[in-house]
Image: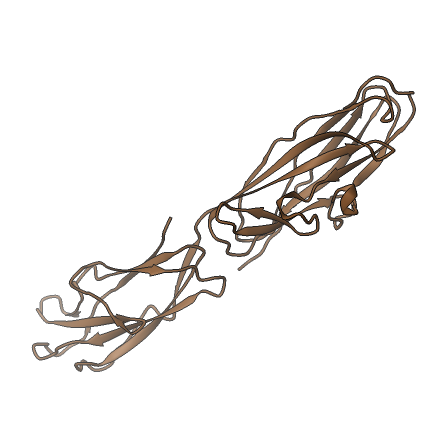
Length: 292
C-alpha cells in the first residue's frame, strides 16, 4: 500500500480588544467541526480556527496566554482515539504545528500547551494540526471525538472553553487478488483438477460470488461450430459449491485485517465421455462484495 501524508495547517487566532487576561474575561468562538473521509493511503491532517477576544478592563500592556486541549474520550492526551458506535477506535493526534512533534494537551495533563504573548491592542495567532492516522484497515463506520479547548490567563486560571468536534467516516474497503487469471488443466481427463488462490482484503464482512457467464459451468470446444461441452465442479476452501445456480454465492466471511485472507478455489473436470477431441475452455467471474 502506498502511503502519503497531507499536512494542512490550522490557525488558532487570539485577539485582544483592549483589557488584560487578569481583568477582562476571555470570550472564545466555537470552531467548525472537523469532518473528513478516512484515507487508506496515508495520514490526513486538517485544522480549524478559533478566535479569542479579551473584554474590557485591561491595563493596555502585553498579555501572556495559554491554550490547553482536553484528552477527549480516551482520557489520555498522548493517546487520543476516535470511537465508533460499536466501540472500535482509531488513533489521532493534536500537534503543535510549529514544533511539528509536540502532542498538545491540557495544563492538568502536564502539557505541552499553546502559549505566547499578545501585544497591547493587537492579536496573536497560534497554529495546530489535527492528524488522523490512515493507511490501516479499520472497521467501517463513523468515528468521533470531542476535545475541549480552554483559554487560560497568565495565572493559569481558565477563562473560556469551547468544544472541537472531530468526525471521520470510514467506508467499506475491499480488494481481490488472484494467484493466476489463467488456469491450464492439461489433458482433458475426468477428475483432472487445478486451483487458484483467491486473496481478499476487507474491513467488513463479505461474500464471494462466482459465475459462468458464457457456458453455464461447462467448458466449450474452441471451435464454436462443434457442440462439445465438458462440465466441471468447483470447491472453495474444500467445500463443494452449488452450481445449480449461476451465479452462486458464498456468504459469511468476516473482516480480514490488513494481511488479507486466502481462499483456495479448485476446478475439477467432470464427465468427458461425450467430448470431442480439441481444446475446451470457460471463463469464471469472481466478485467479492462487502456487507454494508
